[in-house]
Length: 164
Image 1 (cartoon, rainbow, N blue to C red):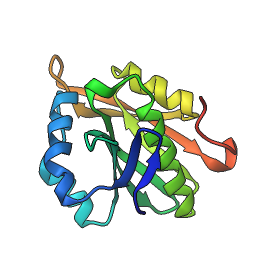
Image 2 (cartoon, one colour):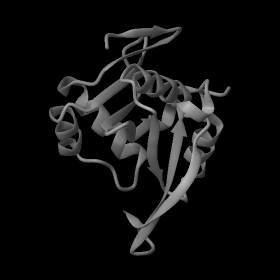
Image 3 (spheres, one colour):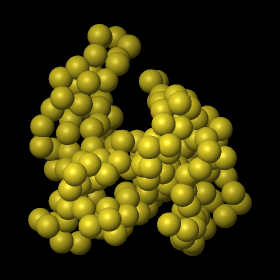
Image 4 (cartoon, one colour):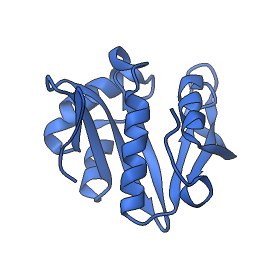
């Protein structure tokens, strides 16, 4: 995967050189962020890391994808708080779906916090459906743990992807 130009932004594979910026955005966006080591391990293990940058070079967002058997697991998708609400999340999902199809996998699977209503709306808009729950999956501040909603997007059932 090489850099792909998209109007005022472009996509490129995540590398170790991106990780300082990735970790800064991760810390800005999440109360319980991934560590630099989580990203390093993902890249070292051959997972797909993808960065979206503005043409100025500023990192807008990123995602990490892990192929598992016959589907792709979306491990992390994040848009910098300053860039949210402008379509970057949907663009990252479309690219994740393109990579998933390129790898001949049947769909995408993810977990999301029930409290992350903005992300749930994005995933549903794209065509993901809820298929279950993982109890006590995420750390939480005001309770011991928070469940995860498990969502799947299937190419076989959905046909086209990336609703507007």
